Amino acid sequence: MDTNQEFPEAFIMKMPNEVLDMIVRAVIASYMNSYVCWPAAQLSRVCRRFYQIAQPYLYANLCMQNSGPFWRVTQLNRSLRQNPSLLPLCRHLIVRCDISDIVSRRSVSNCVTWLTSVQNFELDCLHKEVSWDALL
Image (cartoon, rainbow, N blue to C red):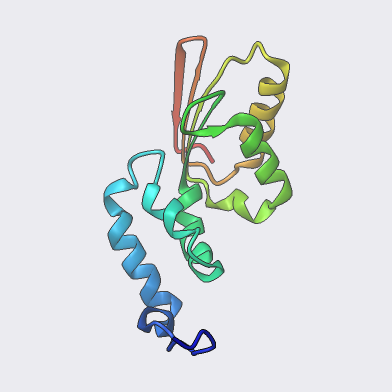
């Protein structure tokens, strides 16, 4: 087998981004009410083009906490600080953490301050939950 053989471009790569976005939106629609959108996360790892399409879905719903499968508070803080273009993408934010930890408290404070496009915010610290809808 010739290892220098060129493979034809996949048909999906010939589609415009707008069509790919409609397909992605349809696939992940059932995940949009959860705070971990696995299909968007998996799609974002395929190539740079798919990452750009999946990125708004990855950051639309965020759940920050100190551990578990969600964004860790300090990781999200670092990502937002390094890439400010992510800030307007977050629409729903849940924060679950122990704010007695100074690093977590500072990170949570930064994230909440930076995420000005959030429409729904839930704060669960020390088992007391406060919710604000339509936070602008």
